[in-house]
Image (cartoon, rainbow, N blue to C red; front, side, top):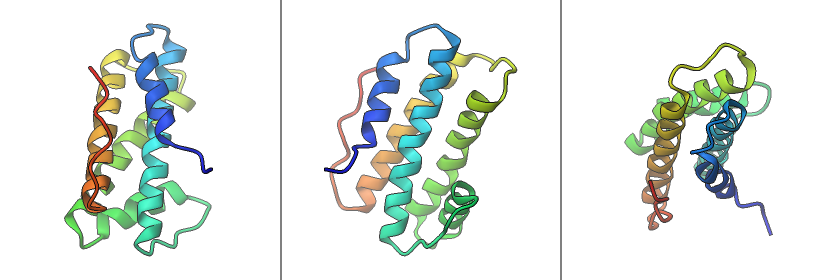
Length: 130
């Protein structure tokens, strides 16, 4: 059975109130990787052929240039989540208002998954509690 990438979102959501900086940075990263893999699967299903290296950027650029407005919106959300993941994983500088960034990252991920479900003609996954 293939890995369920939504588990990353569920883990991040479960850890969101842990005040340790490392845990909150992990939440930013896990949330992004859920969105990235969900977006990549959607894009591959509609003929995205990007390859490594630089696949993250190629994916979001492709989405932004797509004619479907829903896919374009994925291309707007993706880089926002990606930039926080980069800051969390590679920059040792403090992230301003980290707890708020975690909440924003989780919220954007749920919007993203709703858009993907809508574009697939499916019911979105259950919203995680606040």
